[in-house]
Length: 139
Length: 133
Image (cartoon, rainbow over all chains, first blue to last red; front, top):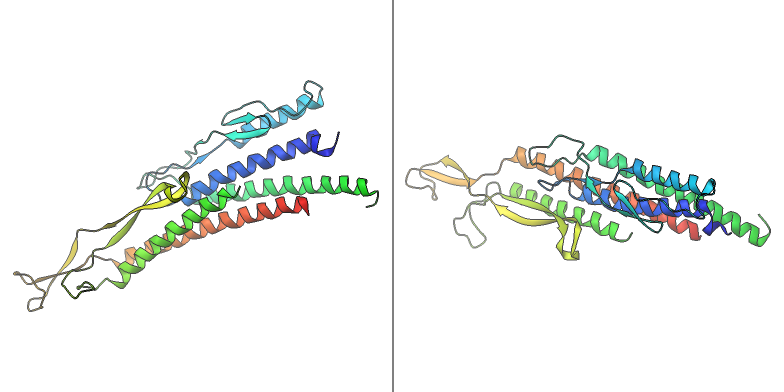
């Protein structure tokens, strides 16, 4: 089994796919900061993480041959590709123009999401470098 | 993931149009005549945003759905003014510079938020490309 087929590789790939899809939602929310009546949307990150953790545990305990996360609240899985079903964030009182966009929370989530993607990409790159190093038989 | 840039760009474009409108209002706060020289006091303009980006045929992003012209004017009592009405009032543009400046600040902050989104997306791309390097 190569790294790309391993549970670690599949997990990182799923995480990167999720983060890039969520980035679309956050960018959409930020683009509509001034749109009257706009309700920002997002997906519950915890649900995705729980589903991913359960899928990793299933592989680790031998209950599943490969990573197969289950559909969860706000995230459906097409194979290992997360398909987001966004819903209103509803975390702020409505402003006078019926918009409840919360720019500081949105930007914090954007930074967190970007870091999650970059962390996964960095780990992936590191493991790939290890594979390449093994192929070349030198560090 | 390339669509991400389009979403943030739609926000940048919309906020820039908003700033242009504010700049027009401020520049014309004392304008009484139109470009042909006829008496037509400047009507305060305001942008109306709507979600989605019709130029890309997508429901993501934002766009300026309309630029509205105000109906109200600032009446100043200036009898003897060439454009005074029967009662001696002259209609001036109803532009409040303080309001416009606060609106401009809001537009600039929203523009910066979209720039932050572009920067974040760029760093994600850089990380993804580094996998191949």
